[in-house]
Length: 153
Image 1 (cartoon, rainbow, N blue to C red):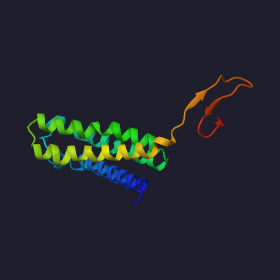
Image 2 (cartoon, rainbow, N blue to C red):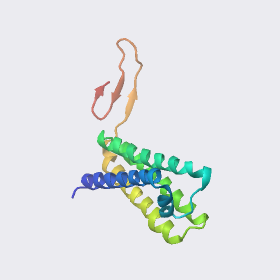
Image 3 (cartoon, rainbow, N blue to C red):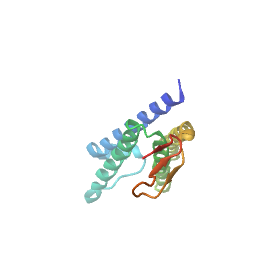
């Protein structure tokens, strides 16, 4: 299996997973909160379940959009940034009475998979990045030149 196929598969799996988590927070908020590792809000605060769900869905859709448009380097950077979420979740679980097993087994493991995928994507695309120079844009002057492809845009 090539690295590109592996990163595509991991990205698809991680994206589908977080979208399912988000949908679950919208449709079954109390069940999803129990799986998160800390007690969720009650009463008027239950709207935060929807907030979490929508944001999880959006995180998955961003990765899918970058994957579909073949923006693999941008996808690597986006996943690197998105790894902050499960790392933060692990910290929240530990500081709010959750178990170490949940913090590590769910959230830290997810963060490790996201970081691994990001690192593989960035390694895969490191040679594909070229310098882009911007010339004066006026009549007869060169525009933006992609130094790798040698094309003027």
